[in-house]
Length: 426
Image (cartoon, rainbow, N blue to C red):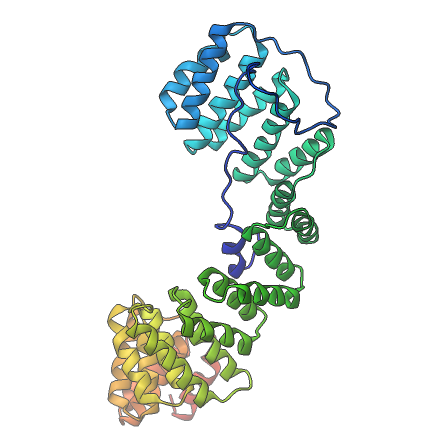
């Protein structure tokens, strides 16, 4: 699936599926019968066939064990009912109980066939039958069988003649995962229309679906509105800034993230780094590069001081790049030097060499360019060309020629390197 990086979290981790309701106990005639949940269902209720008081007691004890999390006791009581009972109703409810045991143990694939078998058995009241069907739809979704989940919801809705906000919320998530974004938007909007307490995950799916379907402006507007309702909520801050950054609305992303920095909502390292990047991106897209670089570094240093931004090669590389964009080569060298020992490849060393080259400190440039090339870089030809120029400035012509010959081996720099060698008579 192609979901953008920014929204994978929004519609993934935010959603956790649980069993729709506690397992239904066998009929207890001593209690007042609750109002039917599916009064208009098209399914005719079958006659229940549980007559054994002993079996009913075992069934209820087994279901109590399911609810209390006693897996061993639940299986000990319910499996014999599945294997030996003459009551189809008892078998169906016991199967549901065992399905829930499997689900709660993380065995979703084991739970699904048990629940399917319980539903296929068919001898149960409508409220129980349709509860199990909805439960199955949730399990399909948890097992990433999104089309099966949608089909089951459609059957549940058509036969049970019931509509709920949660069922449309679940369908919206299914559609999103199937990359059917207009359908996801319609389902979530329907879910929100049926309740005054919408789930946070629905808004996340709606924002993500807007963005994926080319309605980024709507996603950004919605994200900002959700954040403004609770500006100290770190998750809302993340969502709003992520949408704005994807829309390349750097000014508003900076505004939101700076508000979070001021009120303490800016906590996640990734959001701190995004604020640094937002200043840089704004500077590189029509802004003042010197001012943008300085602001980015101010955020970076603040994040480091507060322990929010951790020492890493990538973080120091970002800070060094910000300093270079802000035309502060000396600062860039400082950040790059801190990151160099933490790096596993040569990219940061090459950047450090380039900063020294800008400062016309060619011996240092040669040292780190050579070190970076040895550790491995993506654009090897460019690094060799800079190394050759450093060697030339150091009046080491043989070394410069050797480096330029290496640059000539890289298709990216071959033409320029060969031209240099021709002019040098090599």
